[in-house]
Length: 228
Image 1 (cartoon, rainbow, N blue to C red):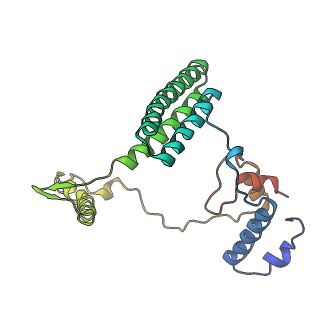
Image 2: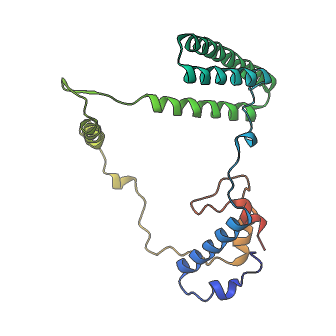
Image 3: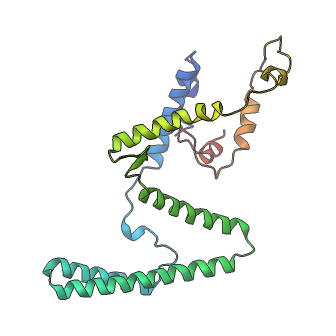
């Protein structure tokens, strides 16, 4: 699809670089969206976490059945059965997770890349979970306890806006003027050499295809694969 586009008449007819690039970007995304349309993946196609065993799947299905039975009949007996099995399922799941990661770290003790990749994924999840749970419900400002979310936000904003000025006022006066550490001013303006086609192609070739796309959502792999 990209080869069939008449780029000369579509792009070079515009003298404004920004307009030309917007058209180029739009055509790239249009072709990409047509060639690789978004599809909804069913739950069956989603892979389970690596620590999920066949036994855990069976236990999870049983827990769900007990939960549905409790919702349907609402009897104390069904509630007790579900909650008892739910607590048991949580213990089994935690043990499976601990066992999986213990074996993973022992097996890959000599592979720093795998270890740090796994550690980062675990820490990112835990940090996100902590951020969700650590909301500020009240502040004590000079003995005045406030609970209103709007006042809390405004008070924190005022504090952080003025903290720099407060810290600067506590610093001692400098012995030398900042201009003493600066070099001589440049009398001539800076000149950038023109960019040629070969330079751009070389930069495209050097792109890492495994990196994430930028703000334009065009991946480096897409750029390298279509470097014609």
